[in-house]
Image (cartoon, rainbow, N blue to C red; front, top):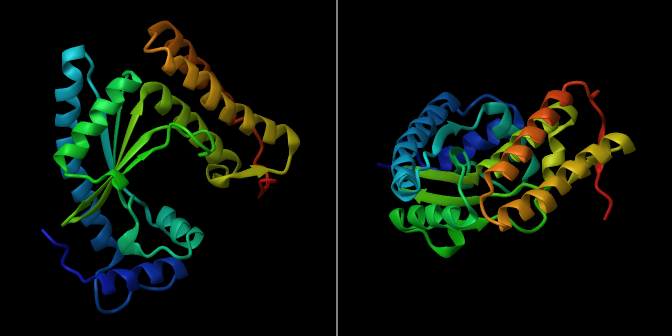
Length: 243
């Protein structure tokens, strides 16, 4: 069903969040909206889990599916970073993630099943496995439902392990590395670019050859070791990436 607020009320709430001012007296509070999207994400999670199991169970694969709504701090950062964005058009306010030890072909099959179930058009599927995304690789499906928008991330275990390591690094030295920016310190910059290359070259190559459990396990283990060392890094300033 439709949310109990108008698009204008949601836009005004988003402007208040971005500006760090109190929510307007008329319209929903942030707590109202976050609860709505958390419930929406949880409902979509159930459907995505069923789709994933239908596609992957014949191969003996059990997907892991999680759901969340953006926190106030993350939402404020996003609205501040993307100055043209308005709260009603933020695709990933509600998010669902499916990960599994699957091949690229199985990942494509899961994405196709999700797109068919929710009647998605081609423009609602974002294949991020190639191109410049700071090393991030996944396929996102943007659901546009009557209840609101939901972003579904479909990731292989390798893609997920890399994303977790990179997120851990971003939390330590600055989340701007997720958006094409790099640390000023050359040594820390090298850590970031090396991790990006791991995804763009090594992980991409392993996945292109099909699901080799031994090779995949080695990559995941190396990323877990990397995560354990991240906390030893000192916080560093972030500067714009050179062209």
